[in-house]
Image (tube, rainbow, N blue to C red):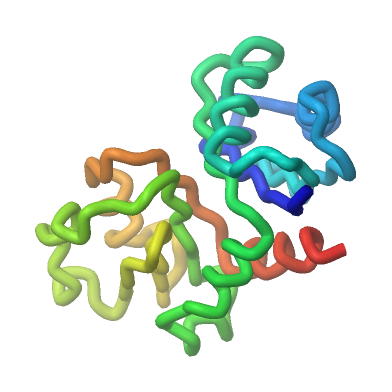
Length: 178
């Protein structure tokens, strides 16, 4: 049994795709996951499971589709994978302002060529780095008007991607460690 983190994509943003966290916890419990917790209302769940994260992601997405809301994508990673994401941070100064530093969690590795048409010079002072299954994004002037985030949202990465700010990323690791 391992601690895992499910990240739901695009829920509870504005008035669209609303899911109550109590309902999400109930669905995860019905799937047999144990010690289920949620963090914030943006679709972050921590639980224990013996299944591999990719299988959990499919199972959770299907259950949400059936019981709560159709078409929600889910990325799941283990506690150790999340710890690696934090340890591998290639932009350590960005972590000083966690609300402007994001991690785009990817459901699978992508070909680095998928980012070739994003010239870093076009987005300065914003920066991004490709990790193992994630993209680190530093929006120095804030996320709201970030040219880089808008460009990344338009990229066809061929995988599910969902973003969390650094404050949430580190808090999720804390919650998965208890």
